[in-house]
Amino acid sequence: MISEQDVAFYREHGYIVVPGLLDSGTLSAMRQVIAEFIEGARGVESHTDLYDLEPTHRPDAPRVRRLKTPHLHHEIFRRVMRTPRMVEILKQLLGPSGVRLHGSKLNMKAPQYGSPVEWHQDWAFYPHTNDDVLAVGVMLEDAAIENGPLMVIPGSHKGPVYDHHSDGFFCGAMDPSCDVDYSKAVPLVGSAGSMSFHHVRLVHGSAQNVSDKSRQLLLYEFAAADAFPLVKPVTDLAAFDANLIAGESVITPRLADVPVRMPLPPAPHQGSIYENQTSTRSRYFTITGEAKRPAMAS
Image (cartoon, rainbow, N blue to C red; front, top):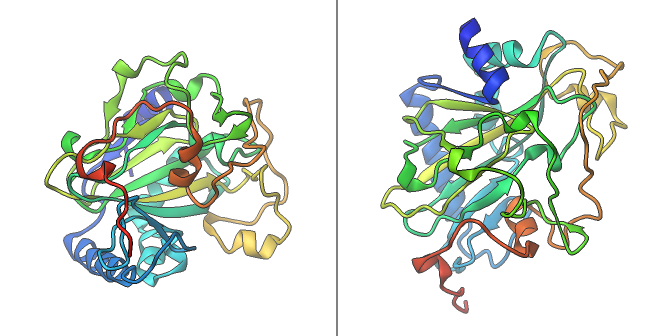
């Protein structure tokens, strides 16, 4: 468990980083599974329900930037999402009703070309009846400023829900000219096995990996058990409760006075945030070097 001071820091700033929550054996096993998944992208020509591919991906030279919902594709990700020490921290941060998994993804930034993610708020993608919702970033490799770590704007979770639309459609990215002081951005760095916890309304993003070291970040999205999603209402309570990590089933959503902006009309490019953000009109993070090369014909 974390200290009361840590909880207070999270409430005030919207994030914390906790070192040493995963052991080296689990990290090694996960890296092996991920390597097998990447090799499995050989021969794949376009995005699938599992793979989100780098723009420079080729079927004979696989480049994967995201595994979508990895917990649905391998047992090791289901096991890690129930790590006891992590669950205890989630209970402290999300409140007494319990903890429910909302989703998962594995973002991978290969050396020199790992794609950036534009500034955004997760809340723009999946608002709930209350905002006791957060994401856990499991650092599977060392995260340093050079390899494109998650960056956050402290305290922004207390502010507005920014517009994530372009030309009237959801695009999953904020306009860089909006009223945010990006000079205050804090990189969430740490050694492999550390975990970051950031509030669902916290403004965050990440730059391209310009280093010679890869960066793999496994992200789990968790909500308080009494936070119900607004975009995709619950119609199957048994399936909804199957994602409970802690606590009991509830059918009385807790309603909070929090700002909501729906991700509608939907993004022209569906599938992942990377695909959503291809329709944004302006970008904050630059893309350089090999990452700018057009994909070669297969």
